Length: 92
Image (cartoon, rainbow, N blue to C red; front, side):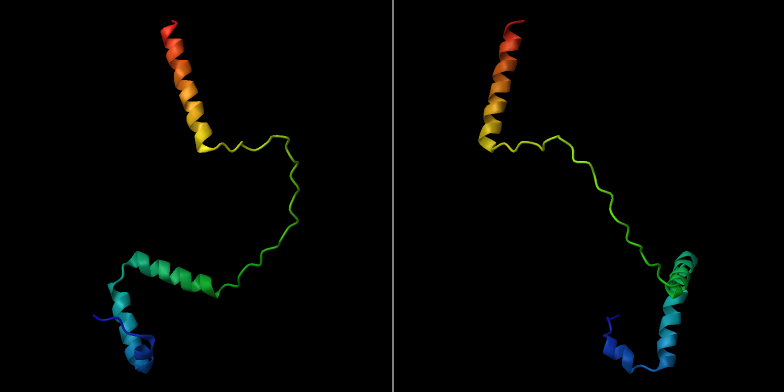
């Protein structure tokens, strides 16, 4: 079955479109049809308007962000940590 374009569907009669839709609805499960009916009903309800509230201000903390370290510094730190671990192991 090829996918039909919107223009092709618009050329069909109303009766043939209804037959096409009913044919596909019969194939669906009861659960899918119930979900479909619920969504149709829900679409008819008016949309709720969101009331924007004034945002509460946050207290600024004195905690600083993480320090950015370059890759070279990370390698040096890791090498130092390995050296210290080896030294601690040797002096037990």
